[in-house]
Image 1 (cartoon, rainbow, N blue to C red):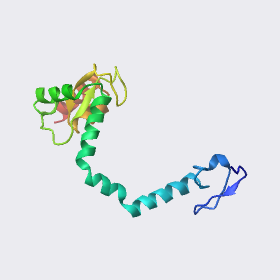
Image 2: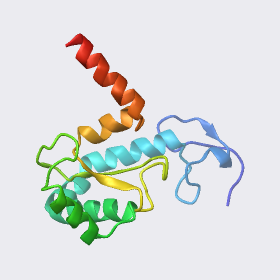
Image 3: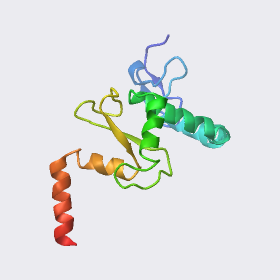
Image 4: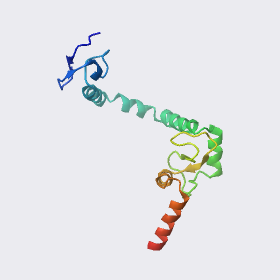
Length: 152
């Protein structure tokens, strides 16, 4: 494989060393030119949009299953929670229109995965990020309630 500096084969024409090449096995393009070429290809082909549109149900079910397993619970446990909550958000009690968000205690498991023991319930797409914005802090939520009572 050539290691001496070469010109980028993309539109920028800059001189690249081996370390600056996005993927030297495919072609000598900088990352910006490689990404631009891929964006152009996918925009023109429309393949991804067509594929996902034609297989929407499969991908929605796969996304739901992945979300469930990432939280350490089974599909049966998820469905039991959904039944126990009567297909409603545990906070606002609105009926779920989209796939419910699985809420878990972030002091046990941070991030988007959990062990399963810290799953608290199912929330709607509005309540889950709102709870996260308050950092799961009871004190902050109580302060927000006081604020609303005083100013409403």
